[in-house]
Length: 119
Ligand SMILES: [Cu+2]
Image: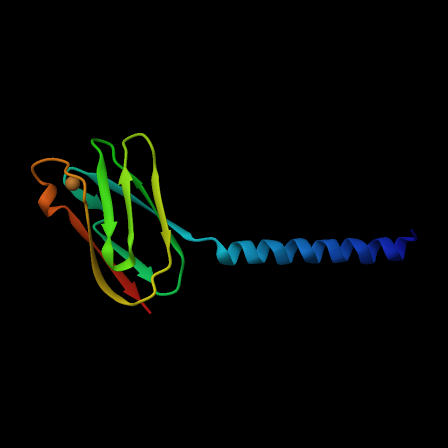
């Protein structure tokens, strides 16, 4: 293979790599970390964008918690020591309540937060 042909090939490979990386970057959800502790989610308010994939990554330092956002049909248990993740793409804008749906103690009933989804 002559040098010119090798350069063309190298250029094509580089372009393919850049294209693949670009596609991966676009599809990668934004990660937002959330801590669930007695008896609050931190942050309590989570800002999302309609149509933008997001991964919520939960930790619970104390006891088992739950995360449930019924408007987007996502929920997970949050076990201490193991990050729990939900990935979804908000399909509507507005303000939506999420809550802890695993009984975690005396303050459980008031343990909720808000997803604020903008367009
Ligand atoms: Cu709870």
